[in-house]
Length: 231
Image (cartoon, rainbow, N blue to C red):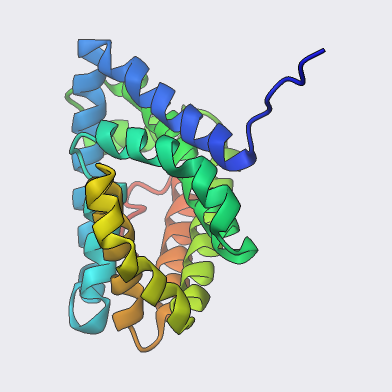
C-alpha cells in the first residue's frame, strides 16, 4: 500500500492562511469588510507605537504594519511559500524552521481573527464597535495566543539575525529566487531580516510592543472605553 503523504506543521499553517484569504476573496462583502478592518488596525498600531517609528526601530515597525497588517494582496507570497516549503524543510536549520513555522502560525491565526471580526463589523464601524467585536469574535485565549506568537517570533528573529552565515545565505538566494519566480517571497524575507538586523536592542523592541498590546487586550476585556491609550 502506498504511504499517504502528511503535511508538516509549516505546510499546514501555510495552507490554512492561504485558504482563509482565498475564501474571503471569493466573498466581495467579506473582502471589503476585511480591508476596512485591516486599515483600521494598521492605523491603530501606528498610533499606539508612534514612538517606535523613529530611530533604528522604524523599519521593524513598518515591516509589521505593511507586510503583516497591510491591505495588499498576499496571494503571490502564499503561492511562493507553498512552492518553497519542501525545500525549506530540507535545508533550514531547526531554529530557523521553527521561526518560519511560528510566523505562519501567527499569519493563519490573524487571518481567522480578522475574518471573525469582519463578519461582525462589516465595512463601516466605529471604534467602540471595533472594541465590542474584538471581545466577541473568537476567544480571549485566541487573542492571548496571538500575542504569545508575536513574542516568540520576535525573540526568535532577534536571535537569528545574529548568525552571520544565515544572512549570507539569504543574500545568496536572491538570484535563484528571481529565476524561480520567488522574488515576492525573497523581498519579504529580506525586509524582515534587515529590519531586525538594524536594531541595537531588538528584544527590547519586541518586549515593548507585546507589553503594550497585552495591556490593550486586558483593557478591552475589562470594558475600558479607551483601551488604546497606553504608553
